[in-house]
Image (cartoon, rainbow, N blue to C red):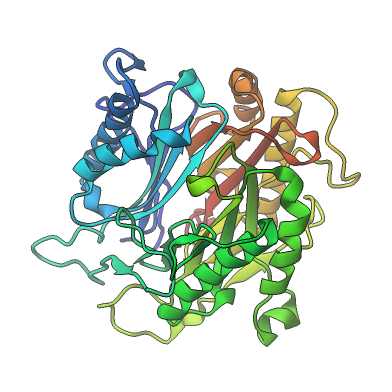
Length: 423
């Protein structure tokens, strides 16, 4: 690879195109970030006929087409997120899932959301390794490979791996509040369930010899948004987790969304992205080259005592979800969903520029809307910041958002070589 890792957006006619201002896949450094795939037949542009199995199959066929178009294979997928309209459909989705992942299993997150575009029953998102992920006959420099890990000290799932590391990141499967010994939800309410989720994450990280404060990004899925304060009480006891982290008051970037339902009827589910040393062996051991977590906040965007606006590690910046809040007043901006979308992106732009990057360095955007029928209006505001539609994108309808907001947006941004130098 060159000294300048360019943001590389690609599309293929073998998967749905032009259903939104985004690219099918955007590569930067060692990851390909895919747009979530709906069960759309790319030839007709319409949902496939049939029920949940047929729709799930089409989602994975579309992902496979995108992955193959960039000279990768399905086993290069690191993480899968499955959004369903009905959590009871998960068993049917799983029967399809097994046909695409017969041996290797990526990490996985499954949630029921309130709405999906085109009234689909399922939508699937994926993160894929890039370049050295698939080892050719003549190994490339670094021989980057995926490392999978499971520990009995955290819940085991026959259809997902607890942690998959590639390059400088460990991507963890979302953790439910399951006691790994009994395989059942812990007793108690949301506080007890939140504590168990973090306990499971910590067990996975300890099995990898990784400290808790190496977490870069946390995503929390809540059944009831009124539980946020209770969850935050627990959250405050687990972050910061070390003397060093407490000295600088480090907390990861964070996104919280309200979901309609979760597996096993859980009240909460937590997933994490974690830094991974200097890369995946068998790379030659290096002296870290100064690779550290770099947390940053700016007064030009809303601040949160329990979340850092952006946390960079290696070649990526992970941003906390941004609400349509005016950073000066702390209030939701006036207007409708278009104006709220613009404010979310204005906040994201302020954060990105505060770390010496530009909006063109954004590789993935996640949009959470209160009403899926607002997507066209969201796109009007969206295009004022992404008029070329480059970043990969996922859009889901959620049941609630903080502050009565209509939209919330988070982003993943290239770091270091992402922004071209002046010369």
